[in-house]
Every structure is written in C-alpha cells, then in structure tokens.
Image 1 (cartoon, rainbow over the protein chains, first blue to last red):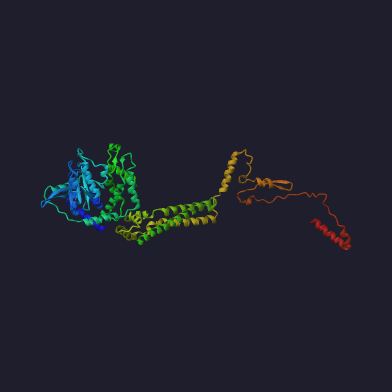
Image 2: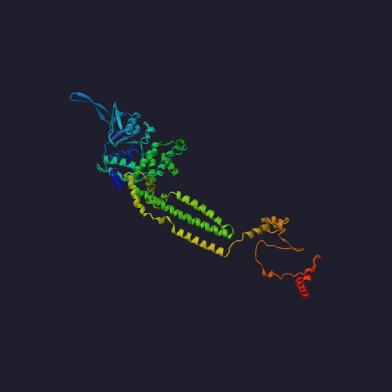
Length: 311
Length: 262
C-alpha cells in the first residue's frame, strides 16, 4: 500500500502545481475515480472546478471532454448523432460520437440542461453505453462523469431529481480558498501567461487495477455495521429529515471508505474514513424537512448529528 | 493464513489465562476477608465460599466473553482497527488482506503480555492475601472473636426488661429463645432443684463460664436427724445359733454388731 500512497502523494504534488489548495476536493475526485463512480461538484463560479478535473485527466492520461449545459442542449449534442458523409459520390450515414465518448466528462452546470438531456447523460453514466437509433455504443473505459452545479442563480434551472442525484456517488462541496491560498493564486495566474505542464503519473491500466484493488480492501464487521447504522439512521429522524438515504448510500459509503483507505496508504478501512466520507456520500441523498430548514440547519449539520448519534 | 490464526489463538489464550488468574486472586481475597469477618463474629465461616465462588464465576464469564482484540488495540494504537479487520476477514484471501495479516504478524511482536498485567497491583493483592491468611491463623489461635451471642442475650434481656410485666421476665434470655418447655415437663423448672425434702433455689448461668475463686466458700455442714422407720430393726438369725459352736458364737456376734454399726 505504501507505493500507492507514494503515487497519490505525487499526484497531489503535480496537481498542486496547477490548482492551489482544494486538497480535499482533489482527494474526493480521486476517490470517485477509484470507485469507478461519478461525482457532483457544487461550488461558486471561479473555484477551479473545471481546472482541477482537467488537470486530473492529464495526470491520468485520460481523454477529457467538457459539456457546457444550457437549456437548449439536446441529448444528441451529448451522445452524438448520425451525419451524412459523402465518399466517392456515395452518401452514407456515419456516427459522429458526442462529447460523452471520453474517459472523464465534465458536465458543467448540469442543472441548466433540460431533464431530457440530463437523462441522456445520466443513462450514459449508469449504463456506460449510449444508444443512438438502433445501435448501442459502448463507452471507453474507464468512464467518469463529474458534473458541476451552481448553488446560486437557481432561476431557469432544472434541479436534478433526487432519484437522479442518487446516482452520483459523491456530492463534493467546493469552498473558497484561504487568504494565503488566494494570494498564491493571484501570484500564479495574474502575472505570467504560462501553460503549466504536468507529468503523467497514472495510465488507464493502472487506474483499472486500482479499481479492482479497492474492492479487495477489508473492512471490520463492526465498521460495516456502523455504515449501515449511519445510513438507516437517516430514515429514523423525522424531526429533521423528510427523506433518508437509500441502500445505494450504504454501498457507496463502504466503497468510498475503502478508496480513502487506499489513498491514505492503509490496507484496512478505519472509522475515520467512514466519518469523513459520510458527508459527501449522504449530503445529496437526504432531504431536510421544513422544521430543519426553518432552524437554518444544513444537510451537513444533520449528518454531523447522525454521526454523533451512531457510536 | 494459518500463522494469523495462531496469533489470534495465542491472544485469546493469553488473555483467558490472565482473566483466570485475576478472577481467582480476587475471589480468594473476597473469601479470606469474609472468612475473617465471619470467624470474628462466630458465624459459619464456610459461607464465605458462596460470594467468592459467585464472584469468580461472574468475573470469569465476563472476562472470557470480553473482546480481547479491542483491549490489545486500545493498548497498542498502531494495531487499532487492524486486528479486528484481519480477524473478520480471516477466511478471505487476496493481496490486500494477506498484506494486512503479514503486517499484523510483524507488528504483534511489539506487543508485551506484561503490559496487560498490572504487576504492582497483583503483588499487592498477593501480599494482602498472605496477611489475611496470617490474621485468620492468629485469630483462631487466640480465639479472637466478638461474642455475638452474649450481645444478643443482653439485647433480648434489655428488651424484656423494659417489658416488665412479662410473665417470663425472670427467665434467662437464651432459655426463652431456645424454648425450655420440653425439658420443664420432664425435669421441672430449670432453676429449681429438689434435694430430699428441701427445695433449693439455683442460679444456672447459660453463658459465661468464668468462676471467681473468691466466691467459692466452704460447703455448709448440715446435721441430719437419725430417723429410722419402725420396720428397720436388728434381728439374729436362729440358724447361726444352731450350727455355730458355743465358743465361736461370741466372735460371730461381735462381727455382726460391727457390721451393723458400720
């Protein structure tokens, strides 16, 4: 496990050349990738969401594509479509793959796309395949969708329904950098127009091997029970939670905890992994009731309460 | 991974031994303390076995069913969560689990059995048990006991004394408690003795055997009148006169007279 830890440390170091701070965000993106899952990133504009993901794709030698979601974006704009191609006087239909045919797809401001387009994207990320007309196209593996959401300017948006949000393993919250970090950002990008290059540290084969490895990480029975207790507790708190998390959250929390253990260089899952990963796993899976909202409670507050309750 | 199974067995074996020893020592201490107390109050000392045995059984059961791995993990934080994880995945074989088990086998060598055994505390307990043993021996040798029966008698007498008009008030405490009814029917009142025509009042002490030599006096000599009934007389048998020779008759007569006098 030590060599994996070294790899991840190098990864942080490389990404640190481009993205200042946001170590937790980078760690959670790596965890999502290791779990072969998808993540929803929520943060204000200008917090290097796109930059972080793009850099990650470079470091892992993965094909990266970006979809800027707008209300007029059509499903075919994502999946691709048949175009007429003329070769030696003959006209043929040829499939033109959309931006979804990549390894890392950044779906920027996913809540701005119409539900129809959102569904097309979510189907691709769930099934890892795209059906256009009568033909089904397998997506290149590994395949991850990292979607972003803007918590402000909710007018004219189509918020993801809970059932669709549940398909994202993590909801990663991106906060503002610290004062010193912001000074460093200014120094880095306000004076020179230099394109920073990063080294490739991982490749597809490595990544897929790690994905297999993650599932082999052992977890103690009492910790497994703790995970189930945390998730089921979300359904037992009607005083603050209207809808709790599904069993998919339990699976996700086990997987994410395992991935975090590997990232931290451990060959076993710790309680700390569970408690840390409970926030991004549960925050988009629980819906607070009016009473909790009236009190100004956030989902993270509710999760904290649950973690304190479950010993 | 048989090696790891051995490690787990060894941990359990060691802990069970420690728990067995601790339980025994504690139970022995309880036994000694209670034995000393009971012998001091003149109660059945054998009863001290009951709480000691109960403590031993309960403590042993609690100790054996306790999760020993958690105890090891708490004492050695570098094994925290690892031991439990490896134990729960003992049957699983994959590179990650195997690596975890190998790491534990390597790190478990740093674990010292003595760290789970409070030597100072156990030494004090052993010392205390030795002292208690000696105390029991000395108390038996010098008959150091708190006579609870006397206290009980006095207390009952005191209570009956306050009662005053009770018809049994003049009776002694334990006699009343033991119920002297049966013996009364056979021998009469315990405090009255009959000697010839005279009735003697006697004080029989049920408790306390001390005799004050100053109280012992010469026995009183009493004169008894010689009152023989009429039927009692001396007669000479004819048979002797016939057969005994004349010169020997005086000798025989003297013999019988001497006998009668005696």
